[in-house]
Amino acid sequence: MELRTRTLAELGNRHLWHPFTPMARWLEEDQLIIDRAEGVFLFDTEGKRYIDGVSSLWVNVHGHNRPEINQAIKEQLARLEHSTMLGASHPPGILLAGRLIDVAPQGLNRVFYSDTGAAAVEIALKMAFQYWRNLGESQRTTFLCLTNAYHGDTLGAVSVGGIAAFHRLFEPLLFESIQAQAPYCFRCPWGQHQESCDHECFNALERVFFEHHKQACAVILEPKIQAAGGMIVHPEGYLRKVRELSAQLGVLMIVDEVATGFGRTGRMFACEHESVSPDILTLAKGVTGGYLPLAATLATERVFEAFLGTTFYHGHTYTGNPLASAAALASLDLFEKDRTLERLALKANALKEELLKFASLPYVGEVRRLGFMVGIELVQDRNNKKPFPEELCLGHRVTLEARKRGALVRPLGDVLVLMPPLAIEEETLRELVGILFDSLKATMESL
Ligand SMILES: *Cc1c(COP(=O)(O)O)cnc(C)c1O
Image (tube, rainbow, N blue to C red):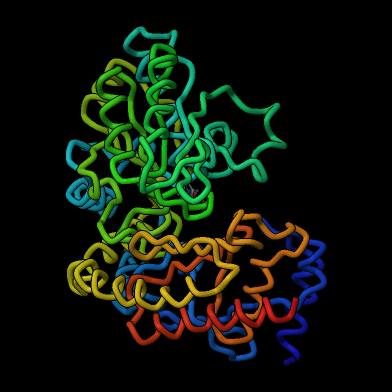
């Protein structure tokens, strides 16, 4: 190990506290320190190369160090690095709002900026709450949401989240929300099989809506796929059903596209798969191509108009930062120049084909995929779908094996995740899946 790596590792171990990381284990393991990046490859301080298998936590779109985005940021930097959106505006913020509305599902017309996905969700919740206050419906104080949902880690976002391992501890601090049981076809909560079921999940949703719609400000969900919950793909028509019920019963619909937005699922937004247009939409992660923190909460003109007689008292200091906005504009340009979505369709087929080999492994329960979002759920016994003991940290072990073989991935428990940059070449994509396959086999053989 080079001296620089060792010095950095020691300093980091003395002072850093990493997110979502069991720090006792971290302090014992070899630290990975990423030093630079090029295209879909990351390089550590020792010069070792890795495929960025989860897009640097689900954000990178067009690859790292893209000259077009670099240039856009540099040009913006030479003019204006930051200026507030409280009481003033700036060109990249204005231009980006227009471009976002152009690509977003029809009906959305207003862009409220922030800087992280969780903030975009907090804003959506407060916006929906105040919307009804403004209309004089102050009995609406709760939200409908789904079990197994993830909307970020701030307390409002956690209040509508449903991942026990992350959220349960904080329960005393949360506001009350009404959870409907989310679909999970591999482990159907109603004991059904996808081929023969009566869509019991739709009925459960309907019951929650009929019972609580008068108290609900909004329903919030991740469209088509619950990402952090384990890449759980929802049955066809579920999202559409939520739109129909919320429209019928007069509840606002918030769609959280923080993970799914900007091409991840094969369409610009996942809502498009079911021709759904929500009242409020949150976006973040991929919006800047993975370059800088930026988020936005989009709303319809109807929601916006309800605020014209009052003020929405919410904002963040770096709201709509000009550098981040410039990166986002350049990223949207690249979608056109690179024909990103068109080319993605072919690569998604290659991905599907490569993933077939996982099905033959006895400890693979299910391989789930929507576009470029992949979850491979490991089970101890395929017949009864029994999970492996948590203490085995199987997902994490596979990650360490993959690191040795030149790929960076991060699992969700025992669900292995692949979420490469959309710009990845087919050959590298096949290599990435191959590395994950070899890493899984090596891990199982070492048990
Ligand atoms: C990641 C994520 C968030 C939170 O975004 P941050 O930028 O990490 O705060 C919210 N919603 C969904 C669906 C996400 O996947």
